[in-house]
Length: 204
Image (cartoon, rainbow, N blue to C red; front, side, top):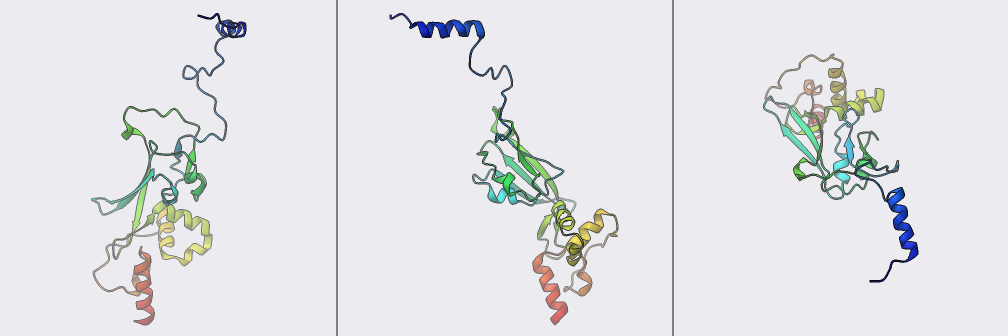
């Protein structure tokens, strides 16, 4: 066996005295750059569950689940499966609030069970009182109303969402089974039902 070169021998002795040149991870936390693209995280206070992140996710890692509950309400749940996430940052880029989902610096994401690789946020859904169609999340409607300011009062759904948040709307009660009339205007209606209401009111 050939003897090692003097340079290699010097490097080996230096490594024994000073320690290895490589990172000490996982014994010590690794330091990553500020712009490192790690685990995307939902920020519940800033996420309005608009679904924009799910629309642009290339691998389809974000799932939007909408379901009706037994008490008659409905909810929307956004689930990020980060075991199939490619950490591209498109969700953060498409976020309408700029703070709803942000890529963190977390990268040590190893798990024994991939079903635990989830990041979740949920909110109540506004539901059309005529056909039962889902409209949007309550937080999304409130965010739009705040963004529009006084212009939001041109849309009955936004008026109702805003006034309910302030406690200024009494319970309207269930809508009777009958054709749409003008007094149904101040109810939560999907675009199709509101169009039918306006057409009926204008043209009979």
